[in-house]
Length: 185
Image (cartoon, rainbow, N blue to C red; front, side, top):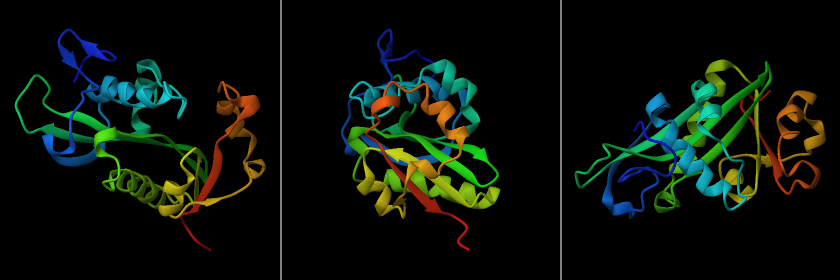
């Protein structure tokens, strides 16, 4: 999957497919070959103002933060597998991490895939002994179903605002801040 944004010649990296056109989905750490598929998936939603855009340079630099869900097409073609989901766990401090860039291909939504991806990031927090993970989201019902609860963003440390200051929504943010207590006291 070493191809640029939307397509490379005849090879499409944000393919249209129905859920029944793909095989089993696996979730694993992201690899360099996934970056362009991840970027296309994330930017599909960013173009609708649902999340922040992520270009290949950002994704290569933060690759170790990401996990991907991939699926092989049932019919042989040019692509050996599709990136059908991704998300990042950004560790901000000893006691806090953030879920970023959660994206699931439209054909794979409402299948539980997003919850599985978030579950793996929460498990990663447990392994790293990070007690809290948060997200900024427009889909608070989804994150609530994963155990996150709304909280006041003013409680977040200054380090969070460094990334927020780069966001075009900084002065009129419509996202909801949600928190998950990983290591309950």
